[in-house]
Amino acid sequence: MSKFPIYLDSHATTPVDPRVFEEMKPYFIEKFGNASSLDHSFGYDASIAVQQSRETIGKAIGANIDDIIFTSGATESDNLALIGVMEKNKAKGNHLITCVTEHKAVLDTARHLESIGYKVTFLPVDEFGLIDLEKLKNSITNQTVLISIMFANNEIGTISNVSEIGKIAHENNVLFHTDAAQAVGHIPIDVQKLNIDLMSFSSHKIYGPKGIGTLYVRGVFPRVKISPLVFGGGQERFLRSGTLNVPGIVGFAKAIEIAQEEMESENIQFKKWTDYLFEKLSAAGAKLNGHPEKRLAHNLNVRFDGIESKAIINSVS
Image (cartoon, rainbow, N blue to C red; front, top):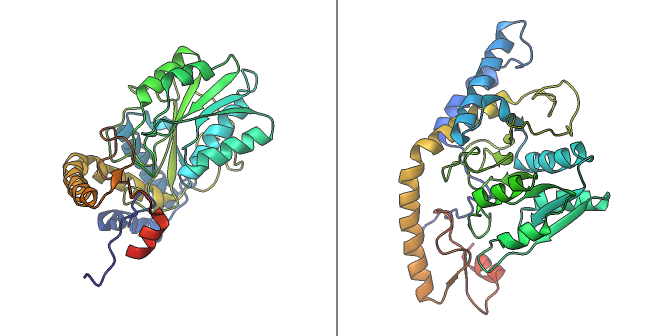
C-alpha cells in the first residue's frame, strides 16, 4: 500500500506544472508592472507579456487575438457569457436554451436569469449525457437569443455534438456558447470550424494557476455583442474591467502551450490507463457512465449497481 494518496480528481483542479511556475515567477517580483500603465517600462513589459499570452491562447483554439477576454475563471466567464449576451440582446428576445447536466456555473446563472424574467429551457439528456438535437431544434423560438451547452461533461466525460449544435444555432440566428473548461488542452478545438460564438475555459484544469480564465467572444462575421458585468478601468475591451493578473495570464499561456504540444501523446497514454482500469473494475461489476466512444480520454466514470457512490469514495479515500 502506497503511503501517499493517489489523486483522481483532475476535473476539479490540477497542480501547477513546474514549467508553468517557472514562467510565472518573474512577473511576481521583477516584471510586476500594471499592464495598463504604458508610460513606463514596467507596465509596458507587463502589457507585452499579456498580449503574447493572449496570442498563444487564441492560437490554441483558432481564435483571433482580440477575441480573448481574460477573467478570474470559467465561472466568471460563464456568467459574463450568459448574462452579458441576454442583457445586450433584449431587443431580440428573452429566451435561453441550456441543458440539465451543465456545470452549476451555467445552471445557477440560467436560474438567476429566469428569476428576473427571462425564459429558460432546460433540455434533458439521454443515457450517455447527450441532448437530442431534434428537441433542441423544436425548443428554438423567435425569442431565442442564446444556446449554452457544455463541450465535455465534468463528471462523465461525454463530449457533446458541438459543431452540430452551433450549426443549428446559426441556422436560426441564435448565438452559441459552450463551457469548455474540461475540453481545452485535452482535445483539438477550432472555434471557427465548430461554429462557436462564445467559449469559457480556465487555466487550473490544464496544470496552470487558479484564478485566471478566459471567455472567447467572436469579434467578426458578425461581431458578438455582450454587456459587461464589471465596470471600472475599461480593460478587456471594456467587457471586464480590473487590473490584469499578469502572472496568472502568463502561466495560463504556458500551460495551454504545453497542453497543445503533449495532447496527442498524453491522450494515448490516458486511454491505455482508463481502458486498463475499466477492465479491472468491470470484472468486479462496474458499469460505465457516459458515452463509450465520445468521451474524454482522461475520464473514467463508473457505477456499481446497489452501492452509493459516496460510500465507495469514502472507503478508498
